[in-house]
Image (cartoon, rainbow, N blue to C red):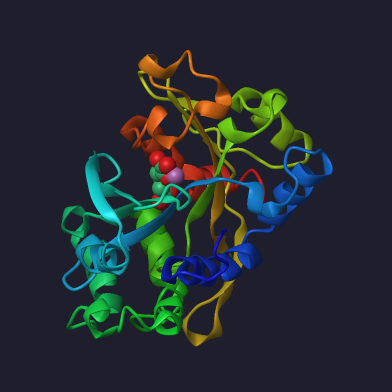
Length: 303
Ligand code: OOG
Ligand code: NI
């Protein structure tokens, strides 16, 4: 019998998804269209491939702080990835149970930015003088749920946000959006035949009015051809800055992933395939372009 009891990770996921869905109208739009067109029977039938977060690499914050939440609840740190041009580093994390999503956490190499950009980031993170995750009771799931959405420093000014945006769109995103869920990822290979290739699913998304990130092409494919990814362009959210100044900025987005079976399992029938038969992990070259889902060049297409 399947237990209906909520595990700690179920509560954490729920706390992340409630604000995420409010901020990203594409989520409900995609789910409703999938149900209407019989790709899935209900929302729960979607297999979430992974979720992603962004962090700032400064003392007491960054990956070393943020990852503690998920390590505590059983995730395991896997391979690192590096993005020299974007000045980012990342790791992915594997869950203990297959039903749970992988996690991708990236971090801005703040020390590699200009003095001016570093100064702005320090202005808003300098108040954090000890690791905030160390002050969290990680078993208090209400507190953990609130932590993702709680400011760690003072509200940035619009001028500082704009200066950061000029130099690092990622930095500007995190200064305002903090640990809000950056995206979740629909597993396309789990869908019925007619939609289980990413080309077909991308066409379906465009037919319902979802605008796709075109950086590096709509469909990003790993060198081995086994990890194929696409993403929507981030939705704009109303943001209020210091002194009540308001503007629209990039919020979160949705990703779509097709993981093909590894060569040794390519003869297995679809029903026999589980996660360990398919391509694991991530691909730096794909990720590099997926980051741009929140960049001005992409979001300009929806304004
Ligand atoms: C993450 C971009 C990378 C993936 O699946 O490779 C990524 C981000 O935009 O923060 O999601
Ligand atoms: Ni992703």
